[in-house]
Image 1: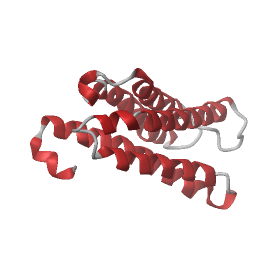
Image 2: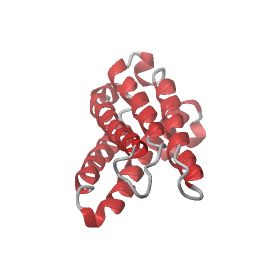
Image 3: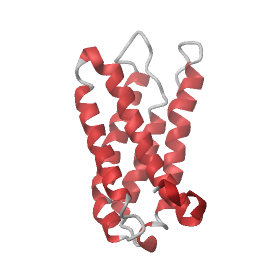
Image 4: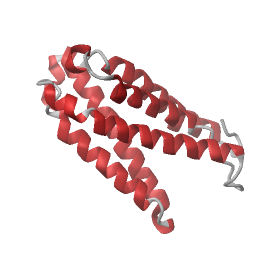
Length: 163
């Protein structure tokens, strides 16, 4: 992980590595909850790979050079995470609609996936690059939270009011 600036290690760990690791773990747990474990591996595998690539992005870029090894690893991590996030979101949709319990999540997750696509596209506008990146992260984390909360309500009816 990058250590070029004071606090960069903490930012890398808490901002990328740990969330990516938790999303990866979450993917393995979701396998058994959607369609009674009969969910296809493409969306779940993409969900898992999205978390792995997000954790990989924790190797932050140097402040002075956008072409350094750590900058390339960071960008590959972010774009790989985005790619697998979109694949997971789009391929799991039909399976969510087929599962009575998970059906209420369908529109929430589809909207979050398309918002993330829009934010990644506008990330190319230099004047709002940072804002677009933060909004992408927000949609990505909300998307993962939607699945986490729904999975928790499966086992704990006290949380069922959330969905």
